[in-house]
Image (cartoon, rainbow, N blue to C red; front, side, top):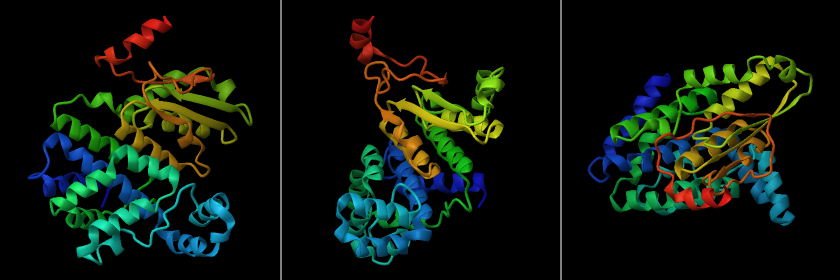
Length: 306
């Protein structure tokens, strides 16, 4: 399936849950399961190596074992459960406990993503409604391996799904993402005239987006700089207030970053009232603030600071 077909396929999985979920709650199921399926596909080639390393290095202690498992997976995250989407489908009667076992098998950094999605609660709700097996089965048909779906395409799929869900529930999609063409234009405007700086060999560049959304502005900015200077070291920082959007951004960057550095630079919470990067300095800042969104919850902190 191409990018559009995959997006439509995932979007249509919502038909499975329409009798049990309000339209505004569809993203609670579809977005986290899309991320989960992407993780499943990414980790599939090294699954056997991770399980072998987990059995072999038990005596190293938690920190040493963690490093060996990351090395075996080829990423800064892993899953030590024997289950994946295919194996979950082998036992329909035990789909709920096995899915929970699978979620608990992820490394601590990826469990944070799962917690922000409140995925365990969603799995329980699907199970109680008799829908969990059907949802896992449908997602298992979506091949989201990076060899089939590039990181850029996956980011576009996430953002298109968010746009459709927000429009379907009469929300403003601009609160969560900015169209990629608009982002590219913003990046080009931001960095126009900065060629001498960003093309210096070995240049370190620090980028920040205080309203990061799904991270598109940061990743496109990084791609632009690296295209003009392959020797540049680009460090990404950001913050996102919406837990689900933050989780999409965090998971996406963990999959793109070999050392996890970019993902670790993304924090959750309101930049106005709880700036996690206070005191940090950046070369560039790019963002699409959520214009029109009520900020009364931050007003006391902002007023006190002023």
